[in-house]
Length: 408
Image 1 (tube, rainbow, N blue to C red):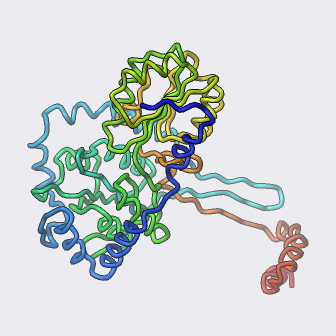
Image 2: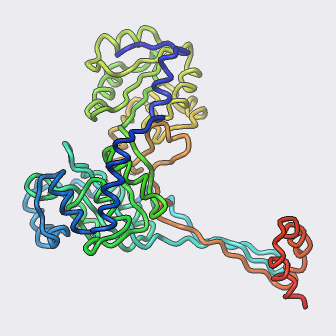
Image 3: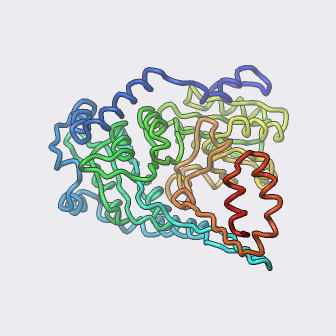
């Protein structure tokens, strides 16, 4: 790991890590999406053969019930039992976040409010590269379920045998996912967005993926909603001389299990910086040396990391200054791994500095609101003058007429 001092120009590369485009990826993804829109299942089969090396028949795109039930035979016996507490943690967290419809009234006969209703149909993408992300199934499905989404379609790339990881299938079955399809990549995203003969279109797509999946989500946004455009995973640790270096080294090592992940230590301790540099096995990570912890908070806010660990004696004091982070882990016994698997909040989080304006996946991501407006004649009369003035300034005479018609 290299040590970078606060104020160095080298920090700009970390701060602006998301400010780039890959034109070739953009072009390839656009071609794939156009093919799926034009040729549907035929295009899905073509790209599955090209990218996954698997030749499928159209009827094989959807995973059959018998294959899902058979997946239970290929998992460890205690897998299901071990999930009970984890699932309850996620459910408990998101039940607290659920919004309720509301109304407000005044004496003139005005009723205003909002109705919250769940999305009809949601698509969930589960990566299955070097490590099939089983945890992402419950971290995405459960908030959607709690929000009230009735129809959930899960897609995941098949392995070289044309199968989906049995743990993913079992998890989807336990959570009563309606449909599972063996398709991945940009073609899978296109199928969820525009629909094919086999895969009906959805209202929203959530879940992480590689650069092609992320680019596909970006291109279909507007046709459907998406959660966010995610990049490589990130960890920033704020620490000082009181922090345990063993914990820091362990968490940095865990972070680097992810390919191309960002691993940064921000500290005001020269001794800690030198120790971590000498003992770390990571050559790509960075140690940012600041004058004090206030500067460390400033640096973290500029990075806007996916995961932020505050590993100092009184993390609550620094928490007040944190504005930009996907998930914040307080104290030495709150490693990011706890958020990845068991704490409750979803591990689908903003990356590449987008924590400045994106939030982690929430039950609210699966709910839409309708504004409710009800006026009596008396209430309309009271607001007639300002309404007519504003409409008059804008030159929308028919808007004026629609109000006047009620008083003729």
